[in-house]
Length: 72
Length: 249
Image (cartoon, rainbow over all chains, first blue to last red; front, side, top):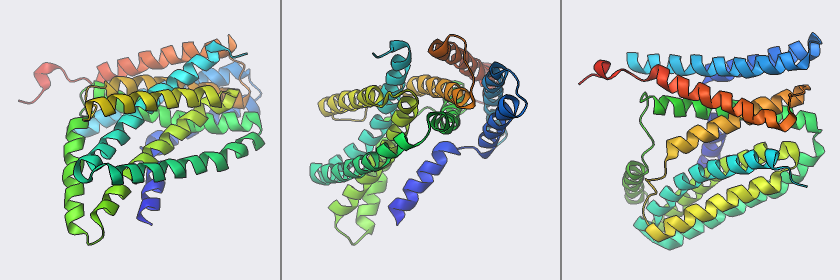
């Protein structure tokens, strides 16, 4: 049971290492899907939104983590 | 015919990511070998490889049942979560915010922990050591399987990606068998940085394809996306690097 629990914890932490980061990426994908499928915009706009949004999320997440670690 | 503009990044990502994971698993297996000999290490490793093979055999055919765009979207989102997580951590390490991964220190810590566990438990000491090897190989192996599926399944490149992962295993195990100590000189953070860049790029690319995005240049867009993530990761690391004057003495 311990091994199974460790495996499940590891699998979970592979994708949800940081809850905010995960939520932000899922929100980006949802908005990109809305732009492409829901609003019928040129699909490339949705793709570029996803690309630059992911980069912005990376910057914000790195900066936030660095600030948190320096405070503590 | 294999398109190397598509297969190259998939094989490269699987190879580099597998090196990182196999080095981590190798450190634990080496701890077990050092403390209890090769028997529990081989038993634990073989049992984990058996479970991993069973997972691939059971899950592999299921992938063919999923429509391609759904598979690309699902894998793309998982890759984005996984890849940006790695790139974030690698940027923080490169920026000096979190310490670098040190295989020698991990070897010493795991040796101490396993020794304490062996003395604490009443069960067979070899059994505890075998379980430690089993867990390490299983956990790191699951990550390798995910990466191989993620970078290979979207374009029917499971075999080339698997070969990349197998090549990494053979390389690490050969070097490990020769030197017989933790592979501390592997530039792990640089590898993680590269893998984070490639997985994030695959993540954006597959998610986009799953949503119906027609990337300009088709597969070649992957290189442009990877270039942007590389630049972003380097800038992020530079952004959080503390100036020397601010470092507490």
